[in-house]
Amino acid sequence: GVQTCALPICDGQVCGVARAAALLGDVWTLLLVRDLSGGPKRFTQLQASTGISPRVLTDRLKDLVDHGIATRAMYAEIPPRVEYTLTAKGVAAVPVVEALRAYGDSWLMDEPCDRAMAALESLPPVTSVV
Image (cartoon, rainbow, N blue to C red):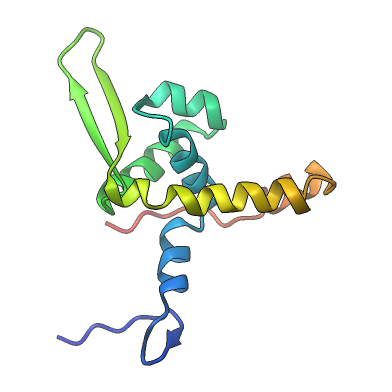
């Protein structure tokens, strides 16, 4: 059948910016790509470095794996060890995160943190598409 997409159209195709923003545009997703860019990380390491709640972190990591941004490897150890690693598609997103970091460092460091946190807290709850 014909697939329809609600994303903006540019030159007769769904805009690449809109596609990338739909996949990567979430604050938590960007922070996870940032942290995974340094190499494989465990769930607890990602939770500690980002402050994401376990439920949201679980949802975001599942989305990253489902969209081919990261892989999940489980090791038969006691206790079980699970690590997440960026794929080539995920590594290709790192310059986007670095550009956002450079922009934030250059232009937003004088912004009050409470305003940034208020914006973060106003985001709608996440629902994963299965």
